[in-house]
Amino acid sequence: MCRIIALFFILFVSSAFSAIEFESVELGFDRVYKRERWAPLQVVVTSHNEDFNGEIRVKVRNIFSDELIQTYVIPLSLTRTDRQRRVIHVFLPGVSSQLSIKLVSHDEQVRVPQELTPELPKSLADLMILALTPSRDLLSRWDGKQIDDKENGHTFVAYTDFKGLPVHWKGYDSVDFFVIRGVSLVERRISKRQQQALLDWIQRGGTLLVSGGADLRQLRGSFLEMFLPVALGDLRRVTQLPESMQRFGFAADSPFDLIEFKSKPGTIPLVGDGDQIYIAKRVLGGGQIISLGFDYNAPPFSDSPGAEAFWKWLLGAEARTPRHAEARYEADRRHDEKIQTILAAVPSAKAPLIGLLLVFLIVYVLGFGVLIWWGGTDKFRLYWVGGIALAVLFLCGVILPRQFVASPVSVNRFSILSVYPSTNRAHLQTYIGIIAAASVETSIQFQEGALIRPLTGTATPPLQLVQPAGPKDSSILRQAALDPWVTRTYFAEAFIDFPVHLTWERGATTDQIEHRLPYTLENAWLIDQGEYPHIGTIPPATTVEIKENPKRYNRSPLSQALVGERKAFMRVLIGEVVLRYLAQELGPKLVGWTQTAPLPMSMNHPVNAVDETLVILYLPAHR
Image (cartoon, rainbow, N blue to C red; front, side, top):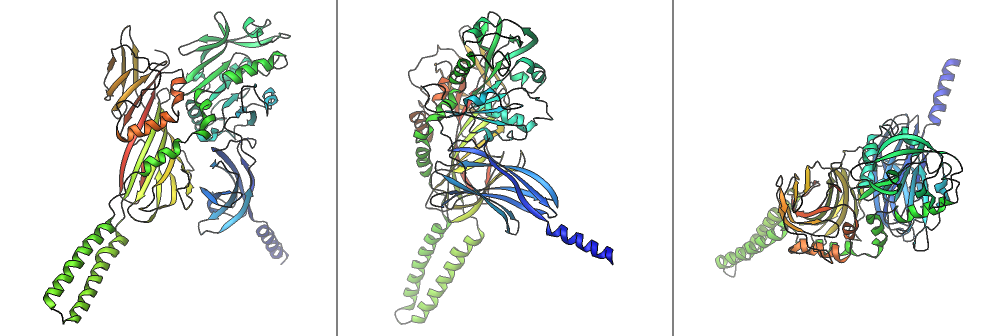
């Protein structure tokens, strides 16, 4: 009897302590993030003696008006005793917002609701540094400071560990400058997805700084070694500070470790003496990687009076690529609104309701004409029966088919595809305009884990974005409301696998370019150090020679020879200087057009799609 009572007591106590709770909720890195950027919301959920199947649902509201802006969803399944971590990417609007986080089961039961009021986001003009280091180091001295009087923004420093490293490149959306020092880069510490996310972010315009010195053993054999700007030599002990480093005010009070850097194709020396390079960088897509031959956090570089001058130079001159430097002006640009106007001009698909109404009216008029001609003026019963018959005909022929036949949807897409042959990856930005033939509510599925947000206020009611749990899962816009009166416009971004074979040979008098993209490039131009030679049309696997001397233009000629929507889109991009970074970047690029949609999009309605894609193919900086 006592055993039964004890067993009952144990079961009662265990059930009384069953619970599901949020162990931690953190937005951004050290709560640092920028406005109008995606930020990672890291959520840790634990379960005690209770399982769960459903999703984490995050609602973003205007903190002043309580208006719902957008909802983000990610699937979650917990066993009876479990602990899981999920990262949800949330777009922070330009207004003060509040996040409502809750667990919602499959039967719509709400569990453990929690509110989070984010701190004020940083400005786009601010410089955000993210550091992956064993502990906080001298970079923290720059937190909250200005680099110099010329810069309007401030510098903010955040630290992370391997668990906090993003697995999606958009997790770095607020980061300008990423620093790696003193950590192992083997795959068991930094996963394949984290490696890919970092490389994608760099190619999209980020800057990576890799510290040296005793970190040589961490770098050799790592996934980053092949992308470094230099070949790694031996580690030697130096007792005399190089002359090129003394200009910053460093004083060699103690010996230090220095990696012997060897130049390789694509190396851009920043600081060096003769054949010895101490700081170098290389261009990777639209971004860059900087290597230091020494450990910046070790004497004499950490405690010397020259440290401040060195970091002012490095952060002021090299921390931002042209693409990130241009991002500071996004708040003053109106290209989103202008592109939305172009997309809104797309005509809706032929609405079956209007066509059926037209047929009905013709039948109605002819039918009553026949009744009148046959019936004379005294057969009112015939009119009555005929009117009922025509109403039934309308019901059967017009209204009922709409319940069983899906209404067509017209989709107009304008995309910018940046292709990076060095990693066989491509970054895709797509502006989407959708209008339906009738009022419908549908789900829109995007492949490759795209992140989608509505443009301006046209996506009412607010969208639910179901984010992928795995790297190859699809993103879904749930409960997207479409109608024939308003064009709903969205902006989607994704990084996709994009194998491409590319050759570019520079001769004495002519250049030769060959690409193996899956489609023909039309209206192609080459952008190379301020020169814009026009190439024309390049079919796949066709070698094209540039015979004439390149002509130098004061302004970009990319809108020449374009017509229709292509010309309208390019005028917006040039007029709002959205593509100015192309001329400022060091690497050459091939720019052209195609009507192929790189990112598949599906919905449960017939789709009439029109696509225009601007392709930016990054060429090797060295030939």
